[in-house]
Image (cartoon, rainbow, N blue to C red):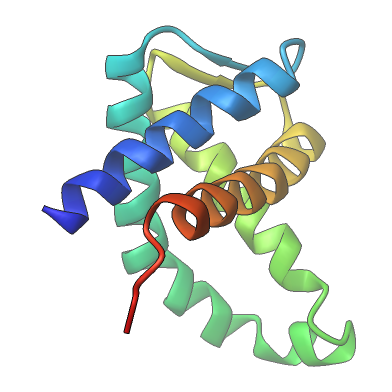
Amino acid sequence: MRLILLWILNAVALLAVAWLLPSSIHVASFASAMLAALVLGLVNAVLRPLLLLLTLPVTLLTLGLFIFVINGLMFWLAGSILEGFVVGGFWPAVLGSLLYSVVSWALSGLLLSSKH
């Protein structure tokens, strides 16, 4: 149940990012946002660790700032795979991935706070 709620919250976060950046990022519908959240989760689970390992020297040289580039590339890749989710370029993807992370973190923290 918690996984489905996280998936819905990530879709809502994508809709919020599209609302905050209407000229750069477009999400056609809530169903497109759900599919994009699923694809983003799969891309980040499969490709991101490999890219982090391959770009470790550059990441160390930039003191970790290159991770923003990797996150933007993953966001841009998801936008290029799906039809209902459009990202308008590399820099909008970097900004979109940053906003998506912040909004998703805030929503998860507010709505899924554990009482342990």
